[in-house]
Amino acid sequence: MTDKDDTIAAALSEDDKAFLASLEADRGMFQQIGDTWKGPLGGWAKIAFAVSVVLGIGLLALIWQVAHTRDPVEHTLWAIAALAVLVMQGFLKEWMFARMNMLTILREVKKLQVQVALLSEGKD
Image (cartoon, helix red, strand yellow):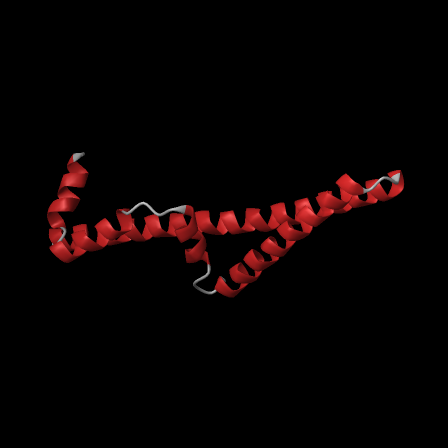
């Protein structure tokens, strides 16, 4: 630890230390996905997740169609549809993971705010 970390740790009360320790806990992917379902965009995140699941099931059906179609034109159309669904699912997942990253960054900023506030209280 650095001198700044030691100073911050010394300024923290037991409640504050417990709060920061709870923020330090490693959160898995599923907990982070669950976190995106809360807050002002939580409804949209739930819809995006549901649509992503539906697109995944549809993608499997399209891949099955591509594998079992013999007509070259029909085969090509099924393959194009599968690629389109794959791209849509990719965009949805990109949005979901960007939201997860944003919430992780906000969590870290909040942690820093608490530490700075507690440090400034200790110097008064």
